Image (cartoon, rainbow, N blue to C red; front, side):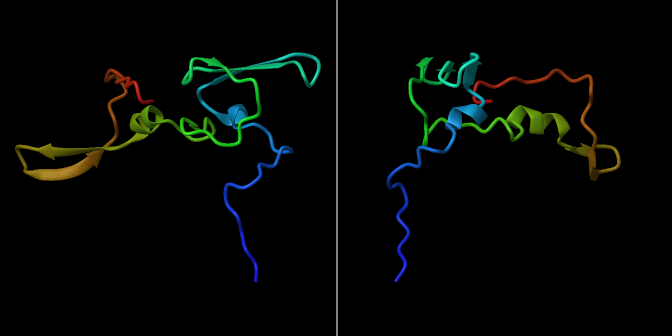
Length: 100
């Protein structure tokens, strides 16, 4: 019988989640031990390698505002009563939300 335990002992050889998190600022020195990680979500310094975080936001994936910038817009023409997709207007003001 094979059992898989989730959330057991963390693997300390893995890199910290902060290296790929959108909220992290990472400062590295010449030595491997010279590294400062500051998290804007918890408003402080992270003194240890993070293996799990509820505020983790992967910077390798596009943010919500990035996706909204490239999204097509569904428009209705009131004269012809037709519905269809159009490219977003490049001159429209960009909406910035706090959750991005």
